[in-house]
Image (tube, rainbow, N blue to C red; front, side, top):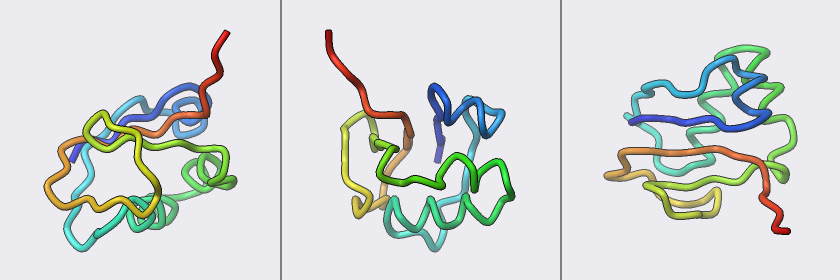
Length: 82
């Protein structure tokens, strides 16, 4: 599955996108827990989960959203309008 990072998440991780195996990962929370094991850059990016939004296949979802069949997961900060 393709994982995308935007704004300060991209800056902290140092990547805008990467391929991640979804095997054994059932929810977005599982994916984040897996990513955090990859090292300090990921720990820093996800240290405040309440400040991170997620979209699964371009639909904004909650952290308990299932990953089954997902082709893309995107992480981004909250958006503001103006």
